[in-house]
Image (cartoon, rainbow, N blue to C red):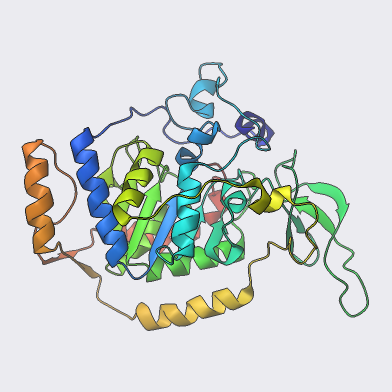
Length: 376
């Protein structure tokens, strides 16, 4: 449960802004924004999605900084009423939609701050997912570094020893003699190297980054979407609470995450699949060690480095933002009638990156040692 996970972390005072007021777009504005997002997904060549705790609240797992979040209520000496166990929770419509969009090659990569394992349980394959703060359903060997899927959520956090031996196959006639540990980061831990490397590369190559259910307060995780902006891509933020990067986004959607995704999928003409326990690797006890291997293939990092060199060529620190003529006419006029505005540029123009944005992008990697391992 989120509460037990939070209780297992070391004491830490600076947990960010808690309990910020939620905002809700009108039904018509929400419909128009979701339609525009669907168009952008359809036109993009490399879409990356950044997910936080807000996509898992529909599964019964409370977030941390929302009005009824774990840490927000903690300040009042309270506990969330909604607090299902990680083993009982199942992937939401958003999790299943993202899995489908990855399969249909609409989304290239997902970068998650969540430790609940719901992306894994939805059926997403490891090469398409970075888990920056760990996974309750994954354990890692302290010797060979390989990761394996568990059939039940770990009870410990903070990379503690689980008193089980490594499940690696025999290498050179000898088994690995390492011990398995949980993968959940505590406050003082650095982010996992391979997950962070893929996150950096995909965020830079992306021409569209979509943030779902995160206030982007954590660094460097919260600054990764800015790499997309640095190289001329678009940034979309979907969250009920305001985020630190709202002013930099090309589109901000204030709505329930599941409702937003359902609307976008409908516009794309793609059906959201149902969760099936027989396709959930944490529910299959008959899988071999190789089938349960959750280690990031090093070949994926090499491939992304090659793509990065091809796509992200040296460039002046300016970005070009634009909006198609049809979009200007069809969307902005309707939204003006609603007396609503959102961050979509009205004409082709070059604009210099402001000094704060440059500093956030260039210094993001230097902040890992103070990384916050929580969600949202």
